[in-house]
Length: 371
Image: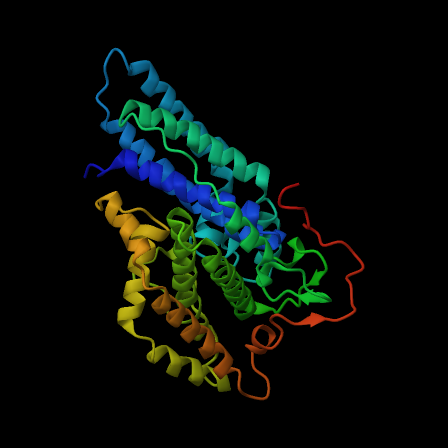
C-alpha cells in the first residue's frame, strides 16, 4: 500500500526527533538527558522508512532524476553509516526495553551501560541535522514546504531547569537500573539471574516514565513538545506491562523475553501476588496502550493521515496512561510485602541514597551527555 501523507509524516517524525533533542538539551541532569534523547532514536527509524517510501512515490523526470539519486544516497548513508550502529538504542532501549545483544542475564548489564553512554549531544545533533537536510530536500521535491525546527520558549527552559526531579541528589545513589555506570557517584547492586536483569529493565522503564512525567507540566501548551512527552510516556507504559505481566502474542522469538510473572518460581510467596495482579489488568487498557505505541508513539502507521496521528497524541488520555503505569508499579510494591523477596532489590533500594557517602572510583562510562 502506498503511504499516505508521506511528506507530512516525514516532517512529523523529524519534529518528534527535534523536540526530543531540544528537551534533552534543556534538562540539567545528564542521565535524564540521555533518557529524553532516546526519542531521537525512535523517531529516526520511522523517518528513514517514511522518507524512503515517499521518495519512491515521486515521479522521476529528466529534471529531478539526479536529485532523487542524491536523496536516495543520503538516506542510505543515514540508515547504514550514521544511524545503523545505534539501532539497538531504538530497538532495545528506546521503543522497547529488552536485553542487549540477546543476553538476558547479568552480562547484559555491562553492555547496556556501554551502549547507553554513547547517547550524547554530538551524536544526537548529527542525526537530527542529517534528518533535517534530507527532509528539506524531500519537501522541496514534493510539497515545497520548509518546516522549521521546534524551539522551546524561555519560560519552558526555565521550568525544565528548575524541575525538582532533575536536581542533584545528596549522597551516593544506589542504581537499581541498567545504567548506573553512566551516572556519577552511583553504585549498582547487581542482582543475578534473569529475574535480576528483568528488574533492572523495569527500573529503567520507571526512570523514563518519571522523566516524562516531570517534563509534562513544563511543556504544557506547546503541542510538538507535548506530543514528544506523551509518546514517551506511552512507550514506557507499554513496556512496563510487557516487562512485568504480558508480552504480545506473535512477538518474534528474538524479541520475546519472558515477563517477570513468568520468571518467578510459582512456589515463591510473591509469585501468587503478581499472578493475581496480572489477572486484574484490564485487557482493554492493554490493547489501547499498545495500539497507541504501535501506530503513533514508537511507530508511524502508513495508513493513517498525519492529522489523525497528531490528534491521537493530542487527545490521548494521560490520566489513563498514568493509571495503567501505576497499576503495574503498585503490583510490584504489593507483591514485595513479605519478609524478603526477589523484588526487594528493586522495590526497597530504588531511589535510596547513602547520605554523606561518595564513590571513590570513577564510573566506567560516566561521560557527559554534551561532552
